[in-house]
Image (cartoon, rainbow, N blue to C red; front, side, top):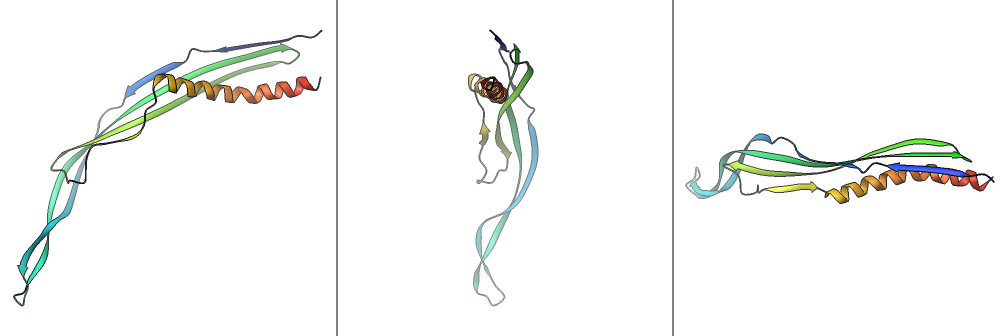
Length: 146
């Protein structure tokens, strides 16, 4: 009677939450802000565009969540397998805001999606199982043909 011994070990998982430094960008736009009535060469009143210079700053701060997880699989007797699997999952969100003489079209906004600790670690765990699944399927195929 042959035995199959499989040992799977996974780390608890590491999770990091950090904010990157604030980036600052100087911005300038010359925008049409309206019209005014002026006399043309023939004395007729016509609309003339009015432009205004806007000098302002754009700030951004990126927040990143990162999860790392490691697994080891060792099987012996009927099927020999020694594998080390690792995965990293990140999610990020960037917050933008403005200061100075800011055109109306610019308002603070957020870009991206930041995942929470459990969701981030869950994705890392899924990635590990996905990596291991191929080896387990191959092991199952080989053992079925014994």
